Length: 535
Image 1 (cartoon, rainbow, N blue to C red):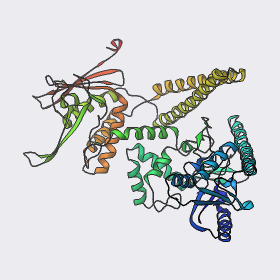
Image 2: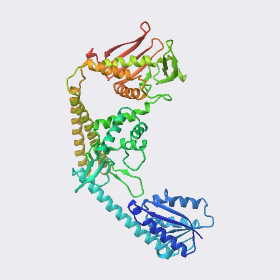
Image 3: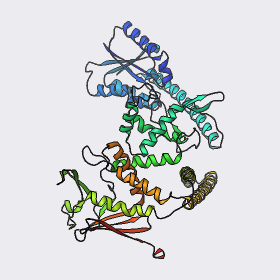
Image 4: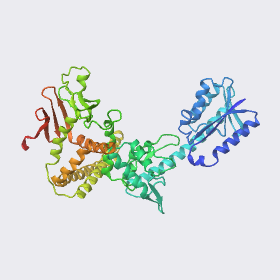
């Protein structure tokens, strides 16, 4: 008779040992003794039977689906080493699963005890045997799960109480665990790569481009992979361990990891400062707006920001290709057009705003605004305070999340301990909020710009790079400008067709209007404070 061998183990540690070979040898030998023909071998590697995932998504689950689909019309024997290889769930679930499987024509056989269970032979002794074995297996797994869960919970409580120790020797790829007691130590060459990844992300490069750069420069990977992959770059950028945070989770064997909601600050050595991390996250979130047109990147600096002043629809970027001027030079014909007008939704603002002209016109008042104040603090002081503010923002967010969780528990349970915990955590969040507000006030007093001459030199150099022939230079410059534009402008409206103009709100403080002067062939602008007290 045809036989399918099923093998399972629940941890990678077991896989490193002899579990697979032992199960395979025992099952093959037993099948040979009974003249069964082994037609398939099923393996669930590192999948737990305690939660039943193997029976729904693993190899065993696929076998059951095949049975129900009629793949074995003449019946089949499912052979395993022990009954607990099939399931460690509650006895009732195990028995019902066995009954449904045998009713479908499957004979369940175990090497242990040389037992066979099939349709029609489930007498009282067999039922009791299955239920008792299932109960013992389930209780063993339940106790093991509870012990492990309690041990990890105790470790998390110690860390939350301020004790610092290495909870597990598993570490991010840029850290190693050394010494006794164990300590996390950064690996300098890998930390350098991590910082490069974040810096290039802030500069506007995507994960695919960063991976390409690392491979081009021959930077060694952190593992056995032959080269860098965009997916791993993304994993690094989204890993809170780079700023020292551990987000504990629970993971039953064979199931997906679930976060507990706790955040342990300063568990790992931070290898990226909080401000660089924040700017990288913002840059990633903005990247969906950064590509327009085949073969051209970051053409429209105002993507997602520009709106029609008549109907409020977004302004759509339209590239009509390259055009040769009378002097023989070539230019890109790019325009911003009201989406409502294009789609025939009743808007009469049909003006095609020449993108190159209006990009320059919009940037002029923004740059003027940035150069208004001359301050005196050092750039290093500013940078230190930016990093401190980013760190305090994380502290406040974590404290607020903890307080929110405690409040939900207090409301749901009504327990005095939960209410006390919420009071303490809320006070911690309030203190963090006050500290953050004070840091932001210091920043407003401290922030400065260099001399106006130096600023103009830098800005003119950057503006010239916006149309540089080198694609990489152009892309990096436009990335920086786009991030600044989206951070400063809270409103950008295009009005037309007569008169044609743009209005915008800069930093929530001033309003600027830009118009095109046909006589001089260029844009002109005016600015005013939104607050009448500044007029």
